[in-house]
Image (cartoon, rainbow, N blue to C red; front, side):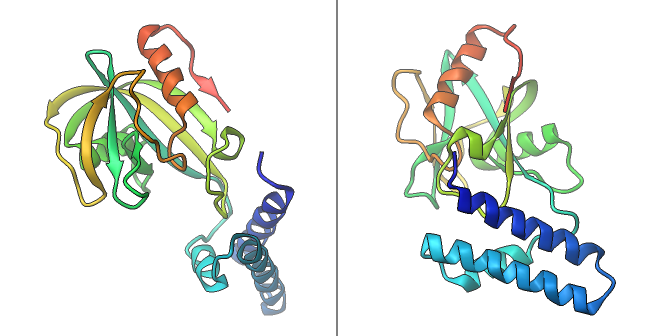
Length: 207
């Protein structure tokens, strides 16, 4: 579980963001901006990140505060799982995926991400898991709440091809998983998806 200060800071940011969305009084708006500043101070103090960076992240979020959605595709071939090597995380490996975009369904988002990061065209077969990023133990911490959706995808075309986000594409056996980007996917999650692959009747994992 994340430290208590992170939950408090996220709650303050959510209150401020939602308040600024509905506020009608400039006096009240100023109070919400002050709350947002306090949340940024907390994150900056505990993470050694410049406050300006945190404030910029907060400024990109608007409207009623809700969790962000990260989508990932689990793609198998000959009992091996597809992983891509991230350029931005010390070249560690992960399931292809990323943030869902507005005006996309979850399955559209994950098939787009898989294609962009690996070169493979896929179709979604099953929703494997919906995880709360905080409860799963991903690092580093983020200044907003995140739900992670993992889908079993089947290759229907394309070929292995890296992108500006990924430097390598490969398939790995369960006992030969490389160093993972634990911000994106965790070893126990990979293990669980192999179980889903071997037993298609397993129900979707939640939380």
